[in-house]
Image 1 (cartoon, one colour):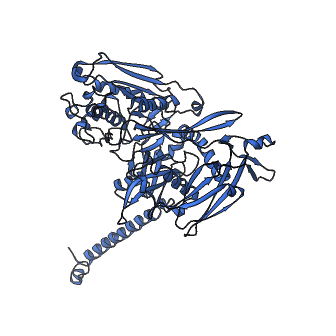
Image 2: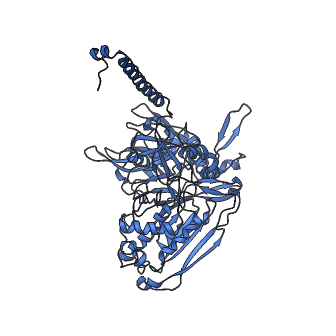
Image 3: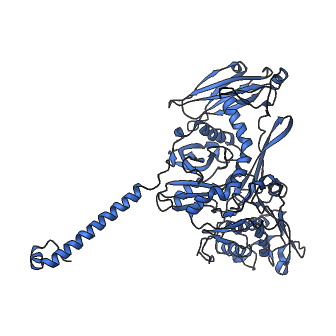
Length: 621
């Protein structure tokens, strides 16, 4: 290398030295300009609100919702292992592309702390920040949270987390690039009509009937069958489904593409929020002789009670142990007066946080929800009236009873689930440029589950041991493994080809009207029958939910459901429901329904989700 500061060389070659000096200056200036340009890009990168905060920094109503949920689930069959669980003081914001300034959800991890102080992940609770979704749209009692899974996948710092639909999560860097994702990206959907939400939906269906009835799969080597297709099996001409060209295009087109689905979600959530807001503004309803346990949020609670209802209750702060939060127990007397009798609990904690929780005591088991009246000066006056109050000449809106206990059903155990995943692009046998798709994985997990049940002595599935064979082929009988191996990958890839999965922005997408083609996998393998029922528009219908529900409750068999914006096919194997009575002129029963799903993410991210679905896939022996 020539030293441009060597005086002897400079004096010997003045022209050459000048040229070299000019070149060096250009090079140095280029480097400086390049550094300055890079620094400008960094400093001018998008800077949304911080995506990680603490429990003390989120709305106290959201914190209370999470804490109350944990306490209600603690020790129940719906959350095994939560006996010693606590909320982690680490909250992640999740955004939606239609509002990148305000969080749409809060994610709170649940942990169990051992004797040495080491925390172990024990699930998560995702809470809606507003009324666009149900108050708790996704939660689980085990494993890492969705954002923690994204953290493990991302190879560069994460700036923003997104929750795109029911079970689709994305992590973005400071430049707006996707650097990790969990679940399918929703496809681009054009031509949706808001009026469809108010119209009766005709469903499509397909049914695979084996051509021979056989008691077991010993003679399945020559079995075939007929796939009967009926109903509305293709979408209207104006509805187009394709893949997005880029993440930026998806964000820009999010509101337009998914507007109908977002409105459907908002409508489904509206009834839950009416009760949520009534509890916050006018009081949690307690009936005579009820025992109510209120979660306490921080250490050192000092509870002050005021109001006429105090005369009809006894209270106690109860410790659950050194490492667990305390709770405030309210026991209502048996001699409460007719009508509503309010009281307020003001809780002051050691960290100077104070919260106020309102209550209403009543003799009957139902009350009127608030009737909010606007006065001439624009202020609002809210009233909660008992049934007896109406007899005294007051007006009222809606009667709301307390929620019933949860009714819970399982199709087998958690341990019996097959923990399969999608096959990444280019990973054998996947020869495509995208993931293999959730549709094939869901069918693979369902077939594998039934095959395992046949081997485990489940009498309902005893004869259908041929659903999975050696190396995923047509050979000897083997039991479907619990985790992915070469044979499972072969099975999933074969199913993927049969259901016409296509690539959409890196995801493997499958239209609901093609899911029934998975029956082709059963040919020469098993006498199992298969059926699918679906809404080609991706709109939720109660009949589809009921089909998946009935498979779990009455046949003890999981069912595939459809979640998100025509996006994801998880395997539902748990179902729970509760109800409460409401009245306005006439009376009706309001239900809260949820499925517990195996996501097809290798055992990660499972959990309870709202039971709305646009697809139900079932098998029978």
